[in-house]
Image 1 (cartoon, rainbow, N blue to C red):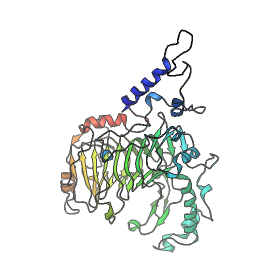
Image 2: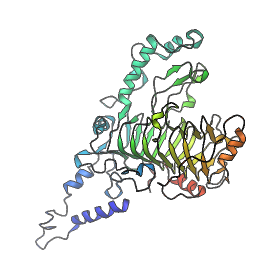
Image 3: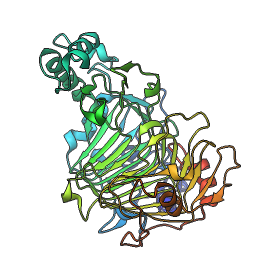
Image 4: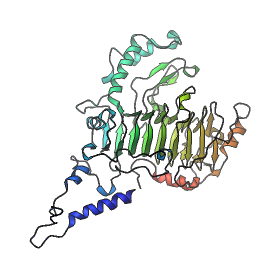
Length: 473
């Protein structure tokens, strides 16, 4: 793809280098350009940057790239082209929340390309001034008052209601208005250069088709107003609202070379209320509500609890036949769980790298096998400390099958690409026999849409070097 763009631009830019005529004029009647002029189409495509921002490099521009044929499920049925057909009036370079909101156009389906330059902070007002949780709080909401109102010792196990819960909801709505950003069909969002960041935002792909997000760091979709749910998990828990990227009924989506994390506000440093960690983040990338035909490649998921949920409920039978997702060449580092957890979907999981740090104390699992899921896992590499067993890498809730092959497992101190071949399925069944249903190897399908599948060791080294934002080849 890159060569195609370079060749076209080289040919076009050659028009600017026509030798001068004998009379001193440059170019020809056909071009009508002097040697010092830049054509209007090039100015529109690569506008001059604001002070302090780097100009887009025409020869390295990725914003009109499309997903390659056969590159995962998103390549099916027409593929993912994003905003590649956008006209010049719908190519934007944005540097703050206001510019980003205008470029997104309320989630319209008009083909558009949005280039993010520098750091865009969603928690800002219309003047660009920073907003914090106190700025969103309204109607007398306060965490101390909320805790006093719904202390399980006095409130009991009923769902919170009354003035403080109403104030929390009103405060949460004010934050959501700023940070939930609707992404419409036929949209490409790319980061410029190696340091493009979207901070505090939740990109919402609701019912959108044909979307590309690339070369962008998305960090800290921080919920100022978690809700207490007394009956969750038996002991109650805090529920947060925002994923960095949330696909709901979205189709033909390609997410590539992005980095997603809680950077800035890690949940493990948050306090404990009612005996439960006061979580501030939900998922990094959730794919739910019958979303379909998604490819996630060369991306990095880091320093987070629940990384990726594919399928949102055991009773969501409308997801059957959908939730077809490919995950390849991604890194999951310091992720507690859901990497991914799958319900219903046919998920191809290959050439991914998993790193659990030596000091991990709350690790739960990596691959979640849930209701009617069909995960086909090939040639993935796992690095874990000694207290984590191979059987801990998989967790099942009502799952029946998991295909795995080519898995390697070793210590995080092992030289990248090291490790030992292991059979996740056999070990999981052996360790959990008698306590959970054995999983079979037959998931009912065999992937056909994929790029070259390398050995786990080869992929492990490549992903360590190349996954994430700012690491485009």
